[in-house]
Length: 210
Image (cartoon, rainbow, N blue to C red; front, side):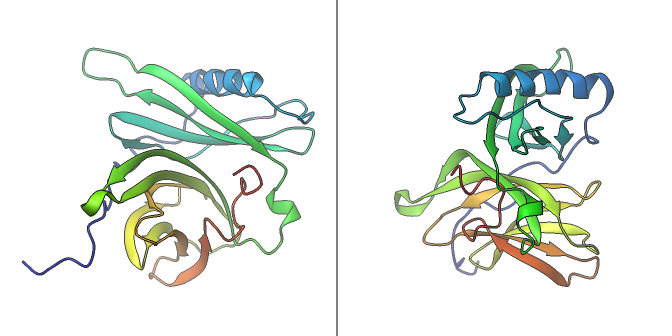
């Protein structure tokens, strides 16, 4: 076997398994998300919370993650995810928990953005020599037309991909590994690159909040 240029997890998360949440399932997830939002500490007056927008689910390390965003009438955006243990043959989903943050950096105020991105670190992966990658969930939407799927690329290596679902995507990929940082790349149906954003270039919705 040829020597590999680097050892890093690729396509570690399951691809999306469900449609975007709707009906009672969306209501259940929204209740968990909004409860966490109301408990979130904030120095700002965020205002009333609007409708939750859901993104494709991804599952990793025994949990499923469903990212979300929603706007407030104070012109902020809430972003985060609901995590839970998926249902087995004889049981319902369990262990629901939400992670929520906020930002005032929204797409309308950043006309130079080509992708509207949020991200959160959800775990780590240790490689050769004890080096670790930050396993990061990345979700968002393109701000230009013509895209078919989004890929996560680490040091030129594709480590995850997700087709656009209602113009939304979710990645779960290693980041910050061996000096390489994750890029989020939008492609059309023929594999032509349409847009590229680094998580560290100021192209995401949560840059000010870190």
